[in-house]
Image (cartoon, rainbow, N blue to C red):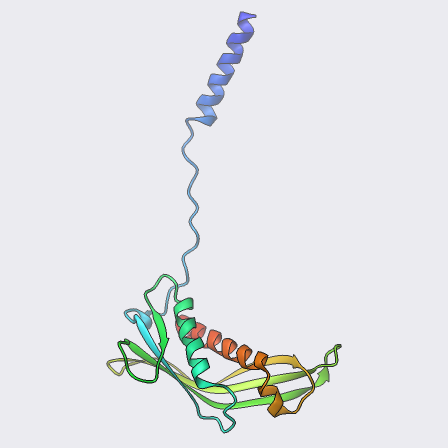
Length: 186
């Protein structure tokens, strides 16, 4: 009986010595770092966003697009001190992002959805320029097309633009893609 106790005690000490207590700690896993911010944006802490709708149709509200783009600058540059704000007048910014909507169009597709809705192709053409306070252009996008497709009720084009879902959807979609391209230099 004493032999069994000694063997059990020796086994427990062996297990503790080899695995439970004396092994080195497990490596700490760190989340992957965010993608590097475009090097030309370093040192820019505040970006003033100015949006102008120069299209003949004026479907999108420039102030709404400006605010969304500014919010996206703050959201898409985590780990940096870069923030965006929407304002027409100069403030305490390090750079200005000027966005000009050149044209807006909605074209119905030939096919309809099973629910009887019409698929629309919505297209915006715009130009964007990010300029530092010293006048140096940091990033530019000229005559770029932003296209999205959406199923809506069958309506003539002017009514499509009045749909609240279209206004919000285009404003957010354009803002997200524009800022992503600017921050990641794509």
